[in-house]
Image (cartoon, rainbow, N blue to C red):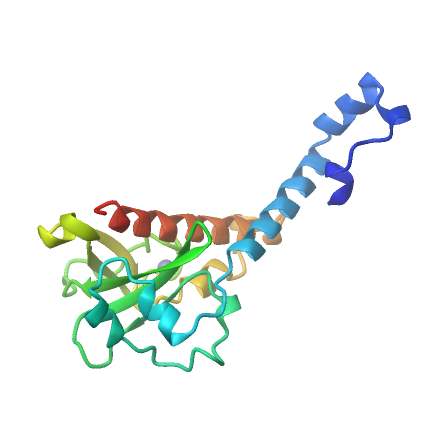
Length: 208
Ligand SMILES: [Zn+2]
């Protein structure tokens, strides 16, 4: 990818050459893909300690956050293969947590699961937007941060209840989805997932 950002040697800067560089669709596609891959590396979840997790909550009191523990060992967990992390609380019914990088900083959100409605047996997850994994999707609400949350203001979202969207976004495309360039298809989906997750957390944080 470096050849697309490095200035061309002076001798090569003829008008035709510049035009060629701008218009060659193969070069443009390659550049977009490389830039997009770099973006993914930057935004992957980074290792967090239990204290960092507890301090990251935007809609929990310090006391509430101090009681929250992940169902895995944060020291050995594979953080880097997740765009975000979430789990259901094993002891408090209907309660789940998600941790999403926003502007490079992980933010934690307490979610409350809305009881499933019989009329909505399948749906599209608003985070990974997968049209194949349409089961196990649940409506969750989050108390907004700060004053808005104290006034009872909430934000809703429809998301895979196992929070396994990172895997759904990385599934192989079907023939019609990404026959020409499966890698670009997955990269685009991962990017969309991250933007959707981040957008949700931003809406929760808006209450501050
Ligand atoms: Zn999903």
